[in-house]
Image 1 (cartoon, rainbow, N blue to C red):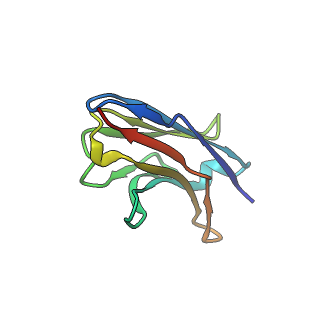
Image 2: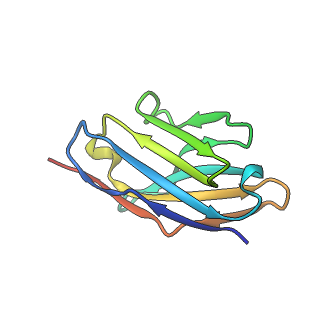
Image 3: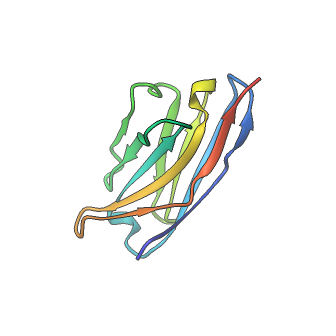
Length: 117
């Protein structure tokens, strides 16, 4: 079982920055694909960024060049650095862990990010 706890959400003006963190309580963190998803009101949940066990990354086109995902296996934590934030980035952001061996998915509780002037 993997438990995920997000932190770092909040309100920021357009052009500002936020850093989300997701701490995982598991001994298998180094083997997990870690993802950040977001869900805006009235919209489907979408993947924002992915970091695999080898630290390879992938980003949604809408955030490329502005967001950076990283992981610290020693701390069992994944981060999402969000720069040049736009109102369209407003959403609840969810941390997700995917175990490629068992094909199990785990979700955090979500953290609200609001970008508004």
